[in-house]
Each structure stands twice: as structure tokens, then as C-alpha cells.
Amino acid sequence: MTLPALGWQGLVVLVVFGVSLLIATYSTYAERVIAAFLQDRVGPDRAGPFGLLQPLADAVKLFTKEEFFPAGANRALFVFGPCLAMVTALMSSAVIPFGNVLQFGETSIHLQGIEINVGMLYVFGMVSLGVYGIMIGGWASNNKFSLLGAIRAASQNISYEIAMGLALIAVLMMSGTLSLREITLQQSVAGEWHFWNIAKQPLGFIIFIVCAFAETNRTPFDLPECETELIGGYHTEYSSMKMGLYLFAEYINVFVASAVMSVLYFGGFNFPFQYELRDWLVSSQHLELVTASNIITILGLVGLFAKIFGFIFFFMWVRWTLPRFRYDQLMRLGWTILIPLAIFNILLTGGLITFGVIN
Amino acid sequence: MESLSKRAKVLEKKPMTFAERAYLPAIFQGLTITMRHFFRAATKKQVTIRYPDETRPFSPVFRGLHVLKRDEAGRERCTACGLCAVACPAEAITMVAGERKKGEENLYREEKYAVSYEINMLRCIFCGLCEEACPKAAVYLQADKMAPPRFERDEFIYGKDRLVEPVTPDNRSKRGIQLTPEQADKLRSQLA
Image 1 (cartoon, rainbow over the protein chains, first blue to last red):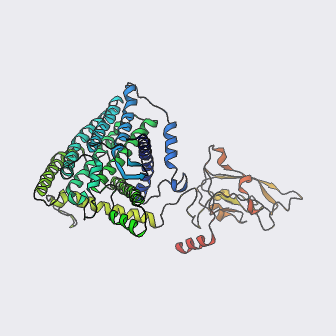
Image 2: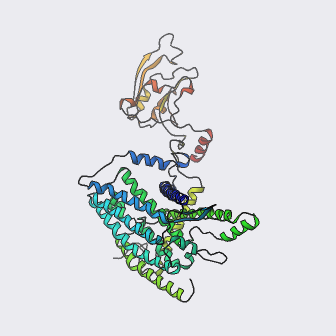
Image 3: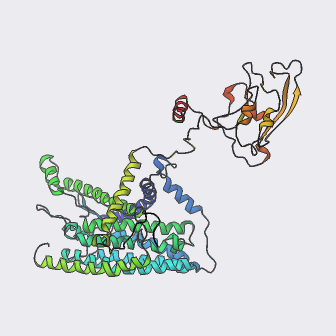
């Protein structure tokens, strides 16, 4: 990789970082507005036009709140917990392929933080590390409710990671690669009628999205912070921006989960008839192939974000529709339903591949 | 036990069907319900009244803060007869009567007038009996003003400085809600 290309890639990394933070910021606003609309309310509309400056006001509020350390808390770990949750959440967005390649003369920019051939495993690893942030924070608070929330978070994440991983294996059996970019590119082939993975893996997608809800600690699986039983769960004792980091980490996780689902099952940055559009641009509009490809890339980027926002909306929609699962229901669903279902899905996929129904 | 009415329903606990156990149809049903509400909130006018900017219109028969009226010439109508104080079930009204001096004819309508006239808004139950008792049409409960909250008890004792109608109506406090004629008509027609 040449030096200017490396510089461009560094810029992309920074942009991905910034976009993750921005989306997390405005997720808090979107959550409140969507919650309000779903409940026939108005929602925040005071700060700025349509309340769009509300996240800024919230940030100012969080920064100026008192930094509170509970008695008997392990101070170092108490600070380390939210930091770890935030860092892992931000790191997992690095491998998401947000777009194809942009060509500017000699330099080609991949709209992706970093391309590694074990991208999906990397995301899984980061998500698994994220639970340590919650565990450490909950344990360091020296509060039994926090500890209970932390334990719940740990057991829930471990339980649902299995089903999630098994659902993913079915996708990997078809793609034969762990690279998210490769998986995306395979979902659209020039010149032939090609379906996204959702058409081949409907069962796997349902398992995956249910597990994604559990992994991101969102309702109906927000047991770690369920306020009716555990006050605030693992962040009971947190205040100020440490609290803010936990909330932010959750929204970044939602963003990453939405992005991963878009990439794995909904074609990533592909959109229907993209090659036809490119050929039309070249033949009828007399654009160069490079320019036409760049236009397609930009449109694909917009398309991927549309998919991601759709999923984020779905996360919020479900949150304000469904009540919370009971803990034993959660565990029963995870271990006795989702995992057998995921294994069945693997067998089904294997059979279909063997008999050549899907590839 | 024999049931007294025929309303009691016998519930039998049936095992759930596969669709019920699969959760997903029920979840889908719930999601459609909330989505209906989402679009209703996004498109139709919301019922929420954004309080400091908007206020709910008062009823035309609302009995609010008292006012001591002036006549057409701008003279105080009250003659300190004390009937309002007698009528008051909460004993919220006190007054001191005085005799009008020469040269004060443009200030007070009658020969006797209220030197001080106090209503304790914490005692007042806003029943409007003072208004009914008044033979001089001097005291009224306004339909568009309320006694605002205050920090000290003695601030709730309204003297003549706050009760007597200002000479120029424009000086009136804008606190409270002014009904537009259309709003008032609409409310009246609803009440009729």
C-alpha cells in the first residue's frame, strides 16, 4: 500500500470513528422521538428545530453532573468498566465495509476502516470483550444490584453468542470466507440474477436478529439493566459521563449490530440493478467507467446506511412494543429453542448446498 | 360454589398452539399496533398541549381571580356594604369602609367606599357567592385569570392595589388566558 493510499485509509478510519459516534449521539434523540411517536406523544422538541440539538444538551448535562464514586468501590476498575465498554464498541465498527472502492486516478480508497480476512470473527471477539466492560463496571460498583446486572449480562451474552455464532456458520458455509467485504461482494454478481443472503437464510436471519437484541442488551432482553428489578442493573451506581459512556456504548453496539446484519443478510453496500445502472451511465450518459463506478459506490454507501438506519429503527420499534422477558424465559429461549434451531439451520443449509439448491 | 350471575366465564387453560409458542405472530401483531400509533402521531394533529406555548382554553363559566370593577366614568363601584364578606362561606373577604370626601367624586361612585378591601386567596374557594351578593355589580370573578402561585402566605392576601380594575384596560396583566370570541362561542355551544 502506497503512502498516500495509507493516508486516505487513515482518514477513512477517522471518518468511521466519527460517524459511529455521531450515529450513537443521534440514536439517543431518535430513540426518544420514536418512543414518543409510538406512544402518541410529542418527544423532545425544545432544543433547536425539532429538538435536534437535544443530544448536545444531554452531553452538556452528562459532563457537568457530579462524578460519584460509591463507598467501597474499586476506583480503578470503576472507571475502567465504561471505558472498556466504549472502546470495544467503537473498535468493532472498524471492519464494516461501508462502501466499495472509490477511484481517484492512481489512488483507490476502500470505504472500510480496515480489511482483514477474519472480519466477522473480529466483530464477534469485540462484542464478547464488550461484556467485560459491563461485568467490570457492575462488579466494581460494590452494589448487589449492579453485580446481579453484571452477572445477568455475562450469562445472557454467553448464551446468545452460541446461537448467534451457529446462525452465522450457515452463512459462512455458503460464502466460504469470514471477510465481511467478500461476503458483501458475493451477494451481488454482475450479469446474473442474484439474491441477498436473506433469501437463502431466512431462519438464520431470525435467529441472528433475536440474538443481536440479546447481545446489545436491548428490550425485550434488557435484563442486565431492567429497572423494575435491578434499579439500573450494572450502571446503577454510575453518574456523569461514565454513565454516558455506557449508554453510548449500547447505541454504538446497536449501530454495529445493524451494520453487521445489513452486510451479512441484506447485501451490504449492494443495491438492486447496480450493474445495469453503471452500464447505463457509461453507455447512455457517456461517463467514464471509473466515474460511473464511483457513483455506484456512493449510492451503495447511501443504501447501506439506509439499511442500517432501518435496522436501528427496528431495534427501537421493538423496544417500545415488547415487554421484557423473564430471566428463565430468556434462558429457555436461548438454550432450548434458538440453539437447536440454529443447529437445524446448519444441517438444512448443508443439505441444500449438497443438493445444489443454493450455493 | 354456585355462581350468582351468569356472567362468570369458565376459563379453560388450553395448551398453546404452535403459532402462540413461536412468539413471532404475536410480536408481529404488536409491532403493527405500535406502527399504527407511530403514523398517527406523525401525521395527525397531536392531542398534546405544549404548555408554555399553548394553553388549554378556559371555560366561559370559569371563576378565577376577583376584580373590583369601575363604572363607565372610571369610578370604583364598591360601596363597602359588606354583603360580599357576609356571603363569603370561607370568610376570605375583609374590608374597611370610609366616607368619600369632597373632590373625590371622580374616584368613588358612592358616598361610602372601601378604604381597604382584602381577599385572602388561600381561603377563597372561588364559589362566586360574593359576585352574586354584590348589589353594586362591583366584584366579579374573572373567567380568564387565576391566582398565581407564590412563595409567601401574605402574598396571597390581595389588597385593592391588585384587585381594582386598572383605569386603562390595556394595562391588564397578560397572565392567564384570553379566550378569542370564536373559542368562547365554541365552548358555549358545547356547554349548551
